Length: 199
Image (cartoon, rainbow, N blue to C red; front, side):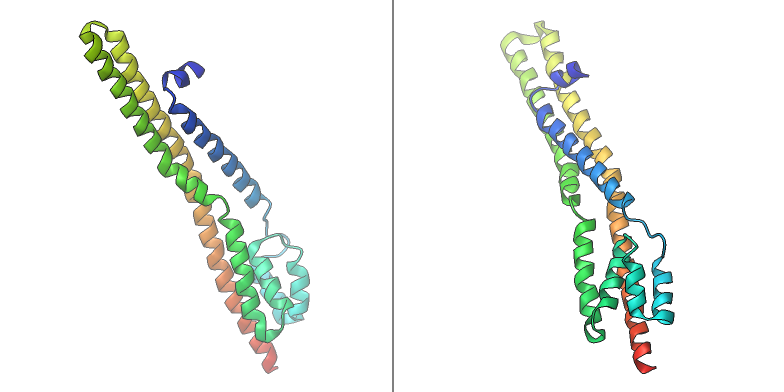
């Protein structure tokens, strides 16, 4: 493994740094989402509590649920009715920032890693052509060494980008889905609060 990395040349250092950052962010995001469960109440169940027992009771129950949607609903239920929408919107912005945390780093690595691999390819090919220009084609091992360096760097950059792309798309889709849920249930809670005002 280390010999292959060494053959890849100096460009393998930033590619390895990208891979370490990618793994670190992926593990952090996995732990983030594993820590956000909807038990013991789903957003629909929380709205049902708001209808039957009132927003105060729903806010207490939502406080027991470690989930972005529940926290948005709790913010609306805990505020004054006329400012519930603004409170939920503010909380939703905070939750969205938390869900998308570090995702720009993954997005950058997806773009950067193949470019670094391409740079390694160019450096390796330049070295090969330098060897050819100095000693001709009489030293094939030196020429193939530069080509091998170019291919290793390219492969490493592509592997890092591919293995980063899959979890990035998953986390991004999960954040988008949760954001849509926050908007949908926040609107429903506003309707529930308006209905209770009429009673």
